[in-house]
Image (tube, rainbow, N blue to C red; front, side, top):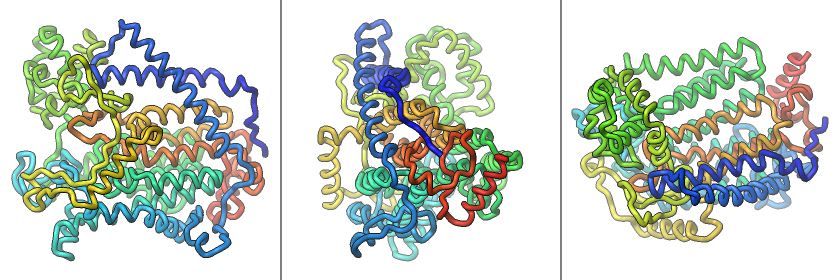
Length: 623
């Protein structure tokens, strides 16, 4: 079996080599104006000049990235990794990653990652609490939050996260006598879970045929990029969901790659269903991401029975999240349902911009629909409009949820009259994901439009509401260790070249477009199943553009996009296995499907017995 990747120089710079840099250049130009001026100057020649300049820069950046991938992840021969690493000395055996699937090898590799991350565990003791998390803990411990009665928990932030945090912190306090000990206990558990799942991913990618050199680079990046350990110590719903979604993505990729054959095992089904429900419950948008991925998986070439099982998993997740828990668990756990305003943050923000710039252009029926649904009336929306955040106009709740359909009809009719205003609103609100600089002002920017770099903000100290959990554990000044780490991170983020990986848009704009560029460049070697495997990454990427805030002005959007940071090196490695030219590895591996699948190797000869049976099953399906 041979997979040829050789082509002419012209084929290396085919049409997609121009299209994707141009698309990225246009996005960054739009985002730059949106983030710095809150408007897009479509009639300015400077705007289009910037698009061409950015496109030129990204063209060569993509060509350089393609060269790196081909040199280290594609054109390396004879590097299939299997079995344990055989080192020449004890140090090499202890420190070298094994890259083998299995419980014990994953635990050992997880311990190696843990050692690399452990200094952060010490320096950031007891862990990091965000403002929202403090409110959640305050609710759990009986403090009135969000105007609710003491002892009531508002599902504005997922109640499952609230109970997880509260239960662990309460356990730590009972065992060790302080809230700090409870916070450290949770941080330690989350820390261990994330590096263990990452170790499982590395072993999985090795068995998929990733080159040894590329895996080493990815491992070094994961082990020493400070974003991974610092964010893993943060107690936040976004980090909790990222840890669970990381495991769910591994299970999902395994399912798609093996054409749903693992669904034959009851143990796998139980684990997959539990992780699916957890991923859906730990983040409001998590359920929709999971459903989109499961729908995409229905197009995998497999037995109809497996498709029915996948559909049933999605239905169960919806019923548990939206029916069973609200009806039967909310009353018992004293949980108050959250409003729909979080899911409608973007439409509400668009309506508010029209109210601010075209206040008189509204009909009586549209105005009535808005006034009956939102806490802010039509007249108030315009005065409270802030281009970069929607909290002021959503007011964290709605007046009457039953009027949602009327509001959506009014939103649509207003948008038909002011589509450009809606576009400007959307770009300004989500510009932080597609711009490298942004306005330092929270309100409407004014000349001379000063900007600041939009880099990731790594919290090294806790910041909690003094009126909620701050009553039990007041905010404290950063200690020597935290100040030391903060200075080190700030220094690294200021070094030219290195600082590029700390820009938010690098992860939320450049790398996703580069991934699409790679997929199109090697499209002849990629199967339908390969594309479906990447669905979790791309769907979660697109979900960023439904968030109420993207710029780091008064909030920290880094936690919103952490799942992309943690998934990207793994997904990029997975992509390289789609078009590997490692012929020695291919000769030692057995393909479960014939050449028509255009796919990857299904299982290695030295894989476990389950994989061997999968190979036989794949041959039967092809016959």
